[in-house]
Length: 215
Image (tube, helix red, strand yellow):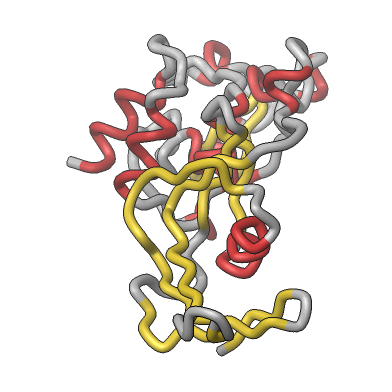
């Protein structure tokens, strides 16, 4: 497989990680920005926009041979790359930033646990429950939605948890931008997870949920 950049071809004769493994991009201050693939990471290296790297090496890519030195160019792509230039981190630029809500990130926020029965389910058996139902004036926002198995969601129906006699196991919360970056990650490596955790608020429920999930 090759990644072409401005006429140069980089090939990967030795894959250190699956090609689908995401790289965490940060700004120069170290604040998480987004997930990128190895092609975009190589482009950043090639354009001289990588200020420094953190974590393990995921990919080693070989390019052309320098006519003067006779040496072949090599790019080692790390799991975390800090980049120069203007920061596009909305979590830093806007104090009122709220991440977009979707089921994929919601289920991951709640560790794929039903917030009523406490059991973990496959995503196909989970649903988005509005703690205060729409018909009762509830909104489709992070602080009013929790992950629920279909059975519990059907049992609760159009009632509040109190009316249905169902205990809500955790208070829903809005993720910060670093938390949202974690929630969007497809396969977060240990060093990337450690890095992101350092940017979570100390009071974040994700600290405990991740400890319980990993053990």
